[in-house]
Length: 438
Image 1 (cartoon, rainbow, N blue to C red):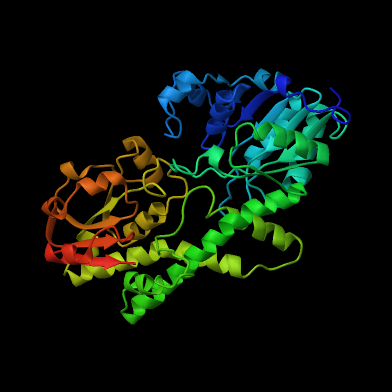
Image 2: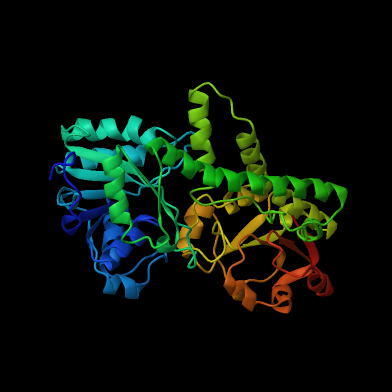
């Protein structure tokens, strides 16, 4: 099959998904579900073994689906060599200086290059800055394969839009952006994804355009969240309840409804803005609005910690002798994903005040809580003498607890800090708890 002269042979499409996390695994299962021969590759042997045992510790794909739709899971790079349509879905985090960390992407590209079969298409789904696929990944592919893009293989970009824990906006229901190195490749990539995405395909004119579209999706959300967080900071100083203001403003038909929070976590919203600002600075532009939004959202964990300390003081308690329970540690409700959870800086700020911090998240293993958050994971049933509770992630399991049960594990003059407007303030006050919200 010569890519420059022939149509893509759909019947001969052999797919390999590189990276089997929140993005890669659902992709692998969806392609298998639609009749494709699919291999799932990951360098983590532990991950491969659990998937072979039909278990997904991330909670995105059910045991029944893994049993029914058999993916060839492997940590052997031969899985790449035997494929001709390779999708890269590896993490693209930032480092401690908030600069793009392309280590995973570069390693994956190197591995693919070394195991690349002629006439293959490589599609990147990982979030990057505009230009990264062609400027970073492509040279690595060519160097390690000894082949030339355009003559021997093709590349494309199709940004992931997976929303962890969202069972409504699933992969097949989200419009897919695709773009290839040339028109023919865009057409071929469209042809493949069209089999699994019922919502439709949007063909971006260039790979850079598709890359840029992905980062601004999350930048827009980050800025909207930052705006409402800044409003909350102002209203807090004015003695106005933010929830009441938002409910009043929300009666206008075109008011965009966002709620203040401890700040967005996860792999996308707190990360993607830095990819674009990094590239902007490279081309001589100093981004201001985007970074200002990031600064506000990053500050919110400290704000919640300060609210808690003030609340303890109001109840006549000394922070250094107080025991605080952080309820819900994942980055959002009802997901197991703890990446970039804002509970981490919150806990660190509280510890700086000498507070004894305990956590409870029914979705996380005790070992994970100890390793990532540096605290013990204890359920409400096993706790006593708590001075205050901070609700961070409002998991559905917490709806089973009533305020009488919560108060029963607390000392006198208890404090409740609600970052999600999860509890009814009047009920909280009626039960004798001091209520604080963002």
